[in-house]
Image (tube, rainbow, N blue to C red; front, top):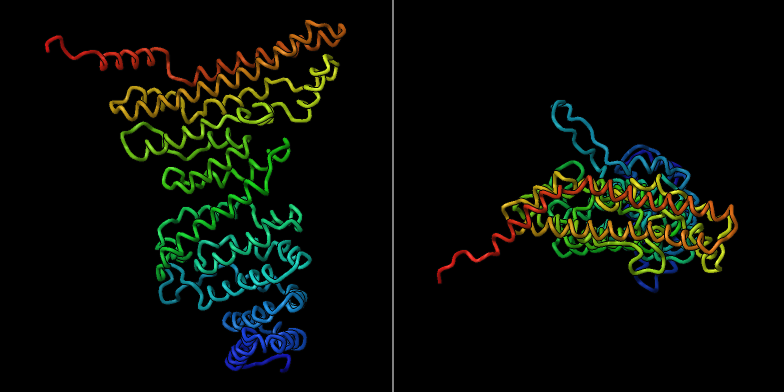
Length: 492
């Protein structure tokens, strides 16, 4: 055809005809014919297509993008040609990824309504991205993922998309991105900004199918199949689990700090007390990334004000599972290593020196703990469980509330014991090395460092003690329990 077709109605009809012709590839005998046709359409009619993409007409744009999708899915050659020809106009496509709204001229004070065909245009742009990932090779997938205004931008409004489209996008992310061994780490992580992870968590939270079907405009659409809604939630969880627990790693101090910033919005968006799937995901993430634990405990959205309610008891159960995560208890590395209070490379040097029976001056490179004491205190006893929560809970009239609160208190004490033991352990090893002698200067440096670690342990105990219930509260709880356990009377 010509470079332009001025009548958009005829253009739309032509686009639907081309879609029908390209759909012939489902018949094996016509596959090669469809591929040739797709290649010719992309290479020879690209000016007309570009005109339609940049025309600003939403319906024409959607029909044109459908033809490009049908041509791209015919093979990697066609997909590469389509990306080469049309990716320079990604700015025009990206504007359709936002679910735009317009004012109702007859009622300017009312809510803004969705533009006609806007959701259809957005869906077809997302579908093209799905096709490129599914059909393309690593050489094509890399620039597709690296275009920030394309699929990474599409995830921002993923909660407003039809469940079928979201399901296809998540599946191709699992198959071609997250589990790929041919893509570099930056490419696999390109789709997952902190905001996008938060959006995926929002979809996961939407357990009610009617909520999943609600668009950004707030207007109810047809409720999806409950089975599809359940399968979608499972797939969202798989994507988040794979990315956070298999792609990401907090093995180094720098990576751990970056992952805290990336994952904190995600874990605080989850509602683990309402859904076992979200609870399992939360525990998995916190177990995989120990430096995140203290930050989550400080910012946790769990409602923990004592009350004889299902909300408090379930929240307390989740908090207990979180407090039970003590890094280093089932691993070769120590608690201080896992929390990056003693950086791994310095711990390695430290252990080498000790195993060799030497204490070189380099031992003083181990960071003095005072700057980390508050961080460690937040990991042991988060402010969320301060006196205002634990003291009323221990004295509550409900036995279940008292039991749940006591369990959290015991876990806090267990964490305190582990943290103090780790700090004192470093001090003890340094003291032992000093006693064996390693030169006057090295021995003096080790003695000073040993004292600092021991002082840090004492300071940690003081900080945590100030956050816990007063001793009189514990005595009153013990007396109350003893009174209830005593025989009610002497007769009979």
